[in-house]
Image 1 (tube, rainbow, N blue to C red):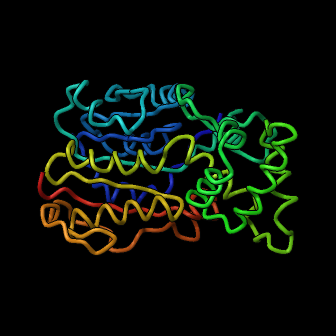
Image 2: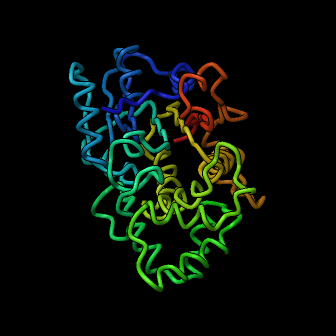
Length: 307
């Protein structure tokens, strides 16, 4: 059993301003680490737990079975607005997003998220998703593949990696994580391997993001967050790489200061949010020693001023 150890627990409770008798949504429940943190410390009126992976949701349900004020929903957070409407949830005081991939997926599943295993290339968090990592690696054109790995992985060796993928798949399809890992290890010169970062890390990240449309879903759910929160409700987002953090930062700026990342003004959006974290909050050294997942985590939080 892979029980999620919540990242920055004290900071999450503080910035989400969790209080008794309020309603919160854990939009990325996973194994229920942050949900348990909230329920243990506060007698909230209701906590809604959203998780798209049925297996993970079952783990969370078992973990939180002693609490009667929890509603479990198997779904994607990009459907947040409809979930709120369908379940007649009228008041939401806080939304929490922990965008990190569950340790279960790295250690306990066989969906191909980890290059430490040798399993079928898949990476679909939800089996209903049509395009898998296998499809991207074997069926995308070399141009599409370059665009995907560079845009979502920011991999400096993209061109060389794609060249070798195209050459190898011409002989036989690349079917497993082990095959792809070995190809990347052979492609990236060892003298350029970064300490503590396997050369396949960024490519695997890019595939996971592309398969599950993670960045698109994040952009869409942030827009919906404003529509479902009560006045003075809060949005807390924990991101783990620069692409996610940039989206959150730009969104908060757009709806607080009224201008986008290009400097263009959007006066209708100004003052809707109040940003509570001038700079992203990071885990301290002690937490990072006890929880490696926290080392790259960044927490940003904002409060809805005008609904």
